[in-house]
Amino acid sequence: MIIGVVIMLQQYKKVMVAIDGSKEAEAAFKKAVNVTMRNDGELVLAHVIDTRAFQTVSSFDGVLAEQANALAQQTLDAYVVQAKEAGLTNVSTIIEYGSPKTIIAKQFPKEQNIDLIMLGATGLNAVERLFVGSVSEYVIRQAPCDVLIVRTDLDNKTSTGKTK
Image (cartoon, rainbow, N blue to C red):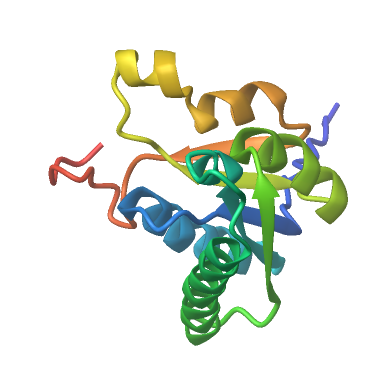
């Protein structure tokens, strides 16, 4: 008797990568481009402007918010160009104000129908995570979809040059 085995490959049709301007986010972006291309999917570049940054200002300054938004859009636009140069045709961007943790973990996946979230690993130590909290850790626990934390570059090397 022959038993047939059907292998179903997971396909990620809508991949979101969180962009914050860090080297870690850039590594996540590069891997997200590859994953999205392999799955013939859509890449969503997401940025959350953390409103806590404005809490030190006595009154919320609309000019600061506009500058933060313009800088975020400029950064995302540059990543869109890179993604398209790499061969992706379906790339979009989203910018939101609020708590990066909850927006990346809950709001964006629901609103955008995200299959996979890719994040760069943070360099926070245990004490910093205690006070600041790790966005990655929160997203891993709360997101309704798969989450991939990127720790290496495209050659699977860490920032210290060691191969994983």
